[in-house]
Length: 291
Image (tube, rainbow, N blue to C red; front, side, top):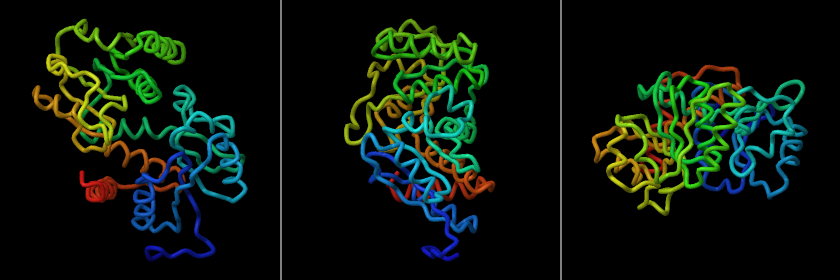
């Protein structure tokens, strides 16, 4: 089909969240539909607070093929899924709903997308020591990913050590791995010498508050070999700047955004998206966002 063509056989996918006006997901999925020759239209749906369940039930009634889920509904939609993928169940967050005969199946492609982005950049988790900044929803999910992909140890730094300890306990209970070391942010000096993969999973530095990093001390960044900031706007965060000034390699979250979308598209349409197609999506988003 030509771009923009919609007929009686067009399937609909979309995004539910609050807000959704800023989303780049329509660019990802409508472009992939053209690349792959899939008769699909992807649109954002603004959902009022408290109505996530109604949105999922309505999507089922309307024969919608699949949904992405963004904040604040990644946990709220879980009771309305017929089944949850094991990774999403452990994390306690779903960002992709896939229509099946018995209802929507819930996945978390945020974390598998991050993993694929890392692989594309030659970064590994298996057997590695990782510094993880933030124990909120995203940090919690990354902690589970690290544990399940075989990271040797994760130094989880958070303003509240109690919250970090709670995440460590959850990971231990649900994965059987005691690999998360909970620490207060200011205790980063206790981390043994050496340079490690460091994942920035807080909202500090997100546009428009671009001039800050969750840790500003330059000595901290001497412990960073590779820095992954899950923020993608701005393109070069303060965290990334500090990583690079200390001689490390730094990446933003745009490639993670691309791959989480690619994985959702593959699940909905039972297709395989090639690396060259994913790279074209990445370039498209770079141009659109000025990254």
